Length: 365
Image (cartoon, rainbow, N blue to C red; front, side, top):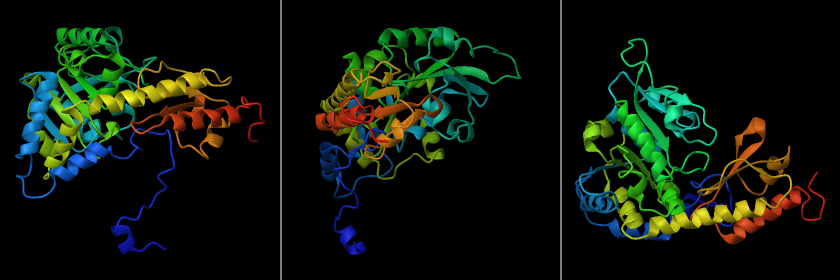
């Protein structure tokens, strides 16, 4: 039996050989991030963001997005999204988003309950909004009976693994701004989008007209933490107060900031995202050759979406964990991470082939 003392001394409680495709949150912390955390440790630094690391992070973010931005490290993605949207809106404001948006489907009502924000969600075939889709809910200004649509939120990459081009983001930004609305981008997988598009981060964010950004780190190898980046500070109000009110102000902020410095000062962010994307592309290429697997979306980042025959997903999950995306349609989601290996992909593809009898053997009953 493992004792408390043995656990504290560093005994592992899990088998590091176990691999899965459920989420890029399942992976551990990138070794370079762990090294940065260790380097930031020791001695005293001023708390609540008045430290040397958070000041340096502002400079690093300016290198990516240009001068004049404001950055606010926070604990998690839900907090980043709620904080960002609150800063854009008055109490009577509403946000137009895709029905599949994380703020609509996966944040347990936090925008509504914590942020007090009405979400006006629109069905999309691929997770992406367009000016025409936005107009389905962008109406009713001046009507006291309707929450006022004053912001648009898009996700890059989307929850369906698809990616907005810079031109698509610009079209949305111009359309929203022409109607007096502001644009938020949920960038939980922002690095994966840049890797796919092969453009700088600012090309489809600040340069494309995004007002405020939730910049994700956890899904790209960080231990914890995201950053709210006000790309257009004139559009965002009260972030310094809202962060504390929303319980997103870290006392030992240097450890958040040190991680993002390590991620963004060099090319770690791009290396990790590019690798995760490449592993998803390898998986997609493999399942494209397997009869019975029906991909449902373009593979433009680190996720593959597909429909499987009845019962196959549950049998596969006995060895590889992953989630149903649409259980009624038998649609599943497979996610790759910075530490996914070619061997992981090949073993998983072989398991899919076996379950579908595509390897010449009988599938499990």
